[in-house]
Image (cartoon, rainbow, N blue to C red; front, side, top):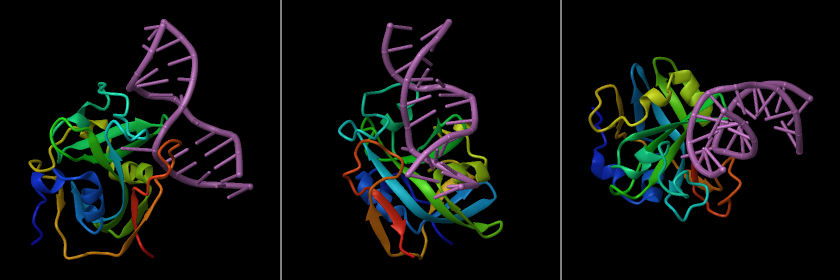
Length: 169
DNA sequence: ACCCCGATCGTA
DNA sequence: ACGATCGGGGTT
């Protein structure tokens, strides 16, 4: 039985967490699957990070403790799911861009908007402590897929950084 | 009060 | 490669 990832997993450098999340299992209600694609967004010096221009009501949870969900609404129609990283006070998070769903039926959810749409994740699911919630969590797994690093998708600033991690093949 | 733009997606 | 789409965050 795979073990839940605790706060000490998320409370580390964001690039480490983003890479190690590849292959881990996310559980959301009755849905569960393998994380296949992530992106790192790190603090004030990352122009693509929502927290680049300081704390606002929207990005406030990024400034809080690690292991908490951060869901935002974008393009007037999509939601995107992140996991907060780094120590309390340091704004950073990992965007979950892809999941290979296993339960209740196999399905590849590639793309953060599609992922949230299919699972029914909205801003109501932002600010949830994944180390405490009984039906929203991340579990360890026996998988350690090979992955590659690329520029992040859909951003106009910070394209020089190879902070997207995606399963190879 | 309001303006503007985006961590997207699907089709071409 | 590009246009549809539009809520709401950030600033006035």
